Image (cartoon, rainbow, N blue to C red; front, side, top):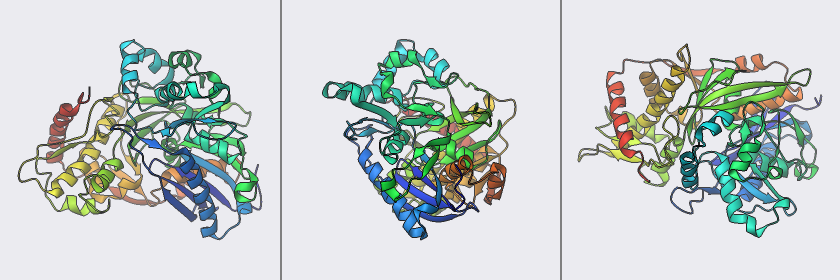
Amino acid sequence: MSNPSAKYILALDLGTTGNRAFLFNHDGKIVGQAYKELTQYYPQPGWLEHDPQQIWQDTCWVMQTAVQQAGITATEIAAIGLTVQRETCLLWDKTTGQPLHPAIVWQDRRTAPLCNQLQEQGYAPEIYDRTGLVIDAYFSATKLKWLLDHTADKVDLGNVLAGTIDTWVLWNLTGGRVHATDDSNASRTMLFNLRSRQWDARLLDIFGIPAHLLPEVRPSLGLFGVTDAQLLGVEIPITAILGDQQAALFGQGCDRAGLIKCTYGTGCFLVAHTGAEIRRSPGQLVSTVAWTRADQTGAPEVGYALEGSMFTTGACIQWLRDGLKLIQTAAETEAMAAQVSDNGGVYFVPALSGLGAPHWDMSARGAFLGITGGAQREHLVRSVLEAIAYQVKEVVQAVDACSSTKVQRLKVDGGACNNNFLMQFQADVLGIPVERPVVRDVTVQGVAFAAGLASGFWQDYAALVNNRQSDRVFEPKAATAALENFTTWQKALSRAKSWAE
């Protein structure tokens, strides 16, 4: 699979708020990149959709732009790695290539009533046992059922394909030749059996989803196909697909049990590798596939992880900017939070899309509590940053509760980890060091590493990870007030739960 004349890996990061392409050279350095923001559609409160055609068109644009910006030719690209927002899913016509409906985004809450119904019918223990997931509108299964219920009468199901964003983009990259996904993305659908690593017939029956609609599940690191030559003028192998949080775990070098990272993106995702063992944390954290690859004999090597998914992190800051217009840029929140000595008694509940781990309350809603006449804009902004750190503290506590050894250090990445106030506050409330790398785009770096290793472009994973540089370690300071405020914040959280029932 190795191309001796190739000098670069092309990594695609198709996220919730935008789509990006990066080119990495042999030294693991970024030599070209491009970004395009993705339009968010809110047809009703609690609903969120993306235009699949826009995602595909923007993917083409960022690939071509990154190649042009780097001043290289596509023939110099050894392989492509693809990492995506997970759980977002769609249906499309395999003849026309047209989506049947906008993609339903992972944050979308429209299927909460169906999830509640499944819980009332007693399915939660069985679904958790088979998938490692809790019943929540976050995951893909209820979204796919909703899509089928709202489009099936208009189409011939024999001509329909289903998938998450990786599947949709892979299908388009390969000119409609490959309908596949990887284990890490499949494990987020609530249709995938963690032990057998196959679509679960019992779950397909519960959700009423025909098996033939679903993609083939392949190892995360391995050949998925080659690009249609018309896209970049040459066929390029696609050698890795990972969910975004698993890609960040890979990029942080967390490849064995006990290693942990937290990505501060649109949401906040804390993932702990658990080795070859499926570790369980009933009702709080989900069990998931970290990644899979074939060993020398062709047998699959499987790594699992525990994950705490917090739905609203960077999205809170984006809301302060675009919704409330309290700020003009995300960067200014750091200085604003530091302008006041405390939160002024104001607490924020970041439940703009319900609450994920460890609460799993689809009906919770965001709230500011404790507002008095003395509250200023700076107090509101600071309370949002504090709430992000408190969410992470809850999940670290849940990880500690199911392990004999407590978390000793937190590796961080993602856009919001640029905020020094937030990172220092995070270290203070956790009481452990928080380590931030020089390259914050660990998600795309991780899938580049995976694609390069799978294609033979690189040979040594440990060397790649060790070459990454640490930017700063935030050491914890005495935080009596912050810890006392954590208790008050939990009280605020309880007031916002079960709100939209």
